[in-house]
Image (cartoon, rainbow, N blue to C red):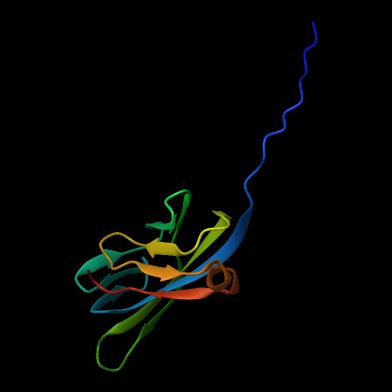
Amino acid sequence: MLTSCATNVDVPKTFAATITVTGQAEQAETGSGACVIDMIRVAPNDQIDIFGGSGAGSTRSTLEVEAIDQLPDGTSTCSYTAHFDAIPANQRNYEVGLGHFSPESFSSDELENGVTYQLRGS
């Protein structure tokens, strides 16, 4: 009787990406990093998701404050970053989504080179 401990399981290929998330805010709290964009509150540690186009893979990360710039008209531009270490590769496209904001689609090349996800209410 022969037995083996070998595991010949294919590990799916993944890639890393950093996404910039930005939007025009009606209200901004520079101390907490929270912003209200299109009547929706966004804050550090909010969860952002990437879904593979075929539904085969997804991953998530959290937002980190990059900058909150107050504009002369009383509004602010709020920018966050999200770092993804293991996005499943070989998907036709990827949909980036955050809460109740409209999702955006990107290719793997776009994600690997860095994209900006513009927050707009759905």
